[in-house]
Length: 152
Image (cartoon, rainbow, N blue to C red; front, side, top):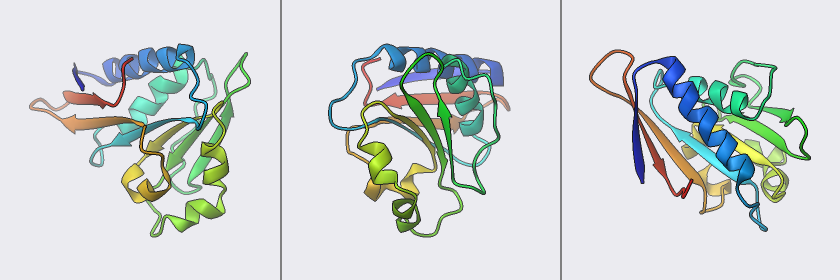
């Protein structure tokens, strides 16, 4: 477990950008995609984190959080990989994601998934995932970012 502090949106994005670069360089799991699960209350910085993560993957197109469409797919430039940004906030039942083909997406080790509100679809996720907890801290823009299950 690793705990970081951020005092601004830019710092949160930089932490995420650095993590994305490390994940791209990391050895691919032979069994399933690289899954990053973002936990935190509303306003904790999950979408800000995703924005920085995409920057680290060199994805220039910044799309809004997929809250209403649930999932967005982006090609990672100069790679054979895709990143899937999933926002499970609105779902009532994890089976909605089964219908979207989540099992197939996860089964491809070339894919990267970054998931907001992962607790809603936890039954579909592999056990060995990177968990990131974003928490409000004492000051208004201060966040604690806790990384679990990562050696990065």
